[in-house]
Amino acid sequence: MVIQQIIVASSTYFIARLAQSFAENGPLFPYMLLFAASLVVVYVPAYFCVTNTERAKYDAHKLYNDTFHTVFLGKTYFLSSDELQSTATTTLVQESNYTLETVIDSIFDISALVFNVLFNVLVIAWFLDGTLMLGYAVGIVFASMFVHFRRHTLKTAAKTDQQSRLNLTAKLFDNWDNVVIFNKHNYTLYNNIVQKSFTTAKNNSVKSTSIQHINSSLGMIILMLPVFVITGFIFNKNWNDAATMAVLIATLPRQIQLLQMCYALIGYHTSIGVIKTMLDGILEVLQPTNVDLDTYI
Image (cartoon, rainbow, N blue to C red; front, side):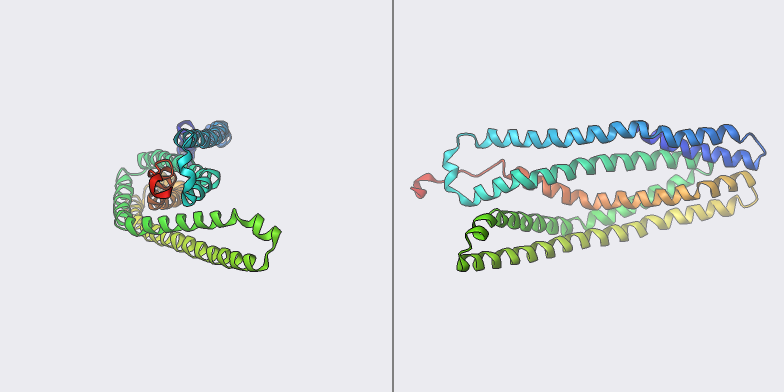
């Protein structure tokens, strides 16, 4: 992944050098060739990123399954707890896989975005002005502070979302008997419960997603302000410098792309609390409370 992001940053370097050479009547073909090569070569490390990430997902799910066996193997007294059985099996079959895939994808995406933004900002700042890094740094700090202060509301919504999703999945496991046997009275009762579970799960999911989106959007606005101010300052300062202006214009699309990546990073910062809550949820199943068999008997 690091190699992949270095290659991506090199394409920014080559396009900047191409613009600089054009303004100064220097050689163009070598930088055009290197820029084109960087766009193709980047797919080689990308292949290993994708395949190894896929391996990691299955390894993580298998590890969770093995740990599940270690925790519950031979613990027959847990059979008396219908609630634990429903939660544990639902988590093992569905929620653990969904959560672990989300965690691994998020870790990979966050790492790739961090390296992408860091390397590209360094390249652009080297060509233009070091104060550009200050704009990104200030923007990210203030945006992160905003997201940090909103973390509690988001974690609460995420926990409720996960719980309602687990409840819905547990109800769906009873579909077969109730639908196939078709005892009208039981089916009516069961179907009403399932429909309410769907509605609750949908509303909680929409609420959690809405909070994430609003936080990310406000964080993005906070991030953009100092970056735009610094970019405007550099633009005004180098108005008469043809080479610098050529680099600024040539790298402007990449700077816009960097802002979008920063937006994605802030979105992930917003969802880190959600991911941690989801992870805590599937780990809680592996720490069951003891059953009071004397009372049960």
